[in-house]
Image 1 (cartoon, rainbow, N blue to C red):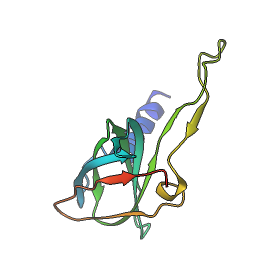
Image 2 (image 1 turned 30 degrees about the vertical axis):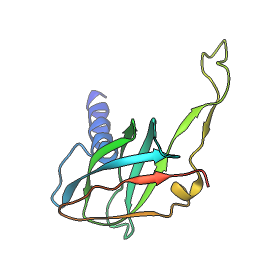
Image 3 (image 1 turned 60 degrees about the horizontal axis):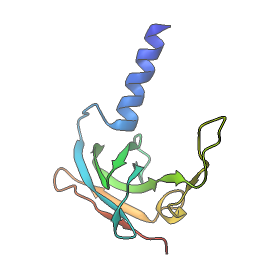
Length: 128
């Protein structure tokens, strides 16, 4: 049972965070802003247009992100949510909403071409 947990962790780390370094993977970084302010927290995913390999994803913190991505043309999806009400006294959680428009995630129009160098991509997101 313990090996299953370790295996799941390693696969999740490699796919979601990009902690492994595969041949053809290159450093990618940049800034994400929401209405000209750094996006406080969120997630960014680079998905190959060709679907030839798995997407790479990481967290956005204070508008910055950094990960390793395979070379090629990518669709970029950005997600973020926030509290929208009072915390439930029993569950101790506030209701949350996804506030980034679909054109930046499920119906993304964002793209990036990852090359062997110079992979700094900034994404200025706006409500409109």
